[in-house]
Image (cartoon, rainbow, N blue to C red; front, side, top):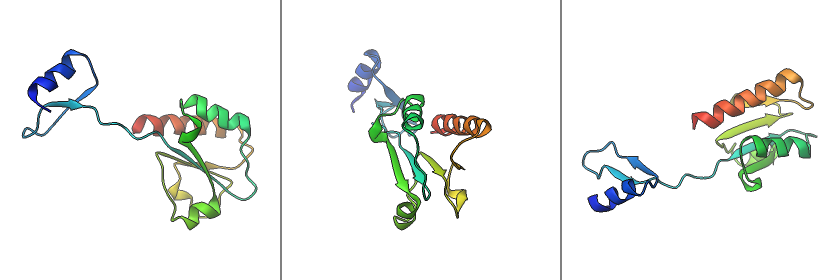
Length: 125
């Protein structure tokens, strides 16, 4: 990006980022961020309700394609893939990999802890 292009981006108010490397141009277009991904890993017999999924999508402003659901067996067989937010419900075993985990049905304190975790994970990235 030339200095003129850089100034044009700034003048038009388009999203741009300040480069910390002096050998590069100071302003450039903001790189396209990957979509937010929430990976929900479910243990045996766990089935989230449609209301729970709808609440997750609404609370985090996600599209249905940004929320992934895997069984614990599939998650383990694919070498424990991670995501921006990794939730485990009714899982057993290595729980340290998850940002948050619990079992259905969620109690009121668990629901508060879940939303707190989601806000923290969402704002950290």
